[in-house]
Length: 127
Ligand SMILES: [Ca+2]
Ligand SMILES: [Ca+2]
Image 1: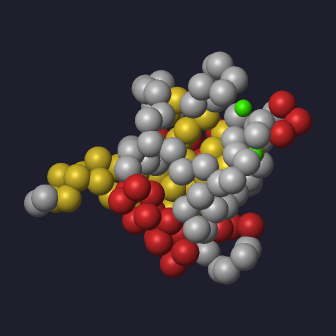
Image 2: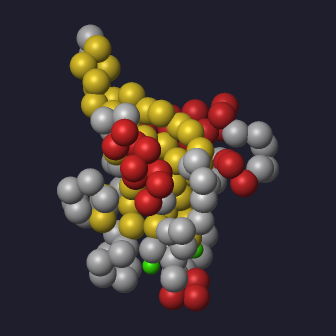
């Protein structure tokens, strides 16, 4: 996750912040295009985490509180008391996972291109 943040910043972007069901559906459809079905690379970091206060999820960029969520059943479970970063499964459901795991990630970038406001970049953590 830390590598993912760095690589997003290298693209003048940030880990994606998902604020609606539509955005969640859109990003998860891009992930499904990108990843090989059922491979671990389908797990994709987004910018939510509860590093500061357990159970209080905020967006990494400015620390804004997460409002929309799309947790998988039984999540977030903070398994082993070490799960403080959030990833998407290919179906768009959310899970908390240890931040040091190396998976794919999705960056979001504000671009001004006619009516389009957000672009996304999906890639893998380079380790
Ligand atoms: Ca946690
Ligand atoms: Ca979990």
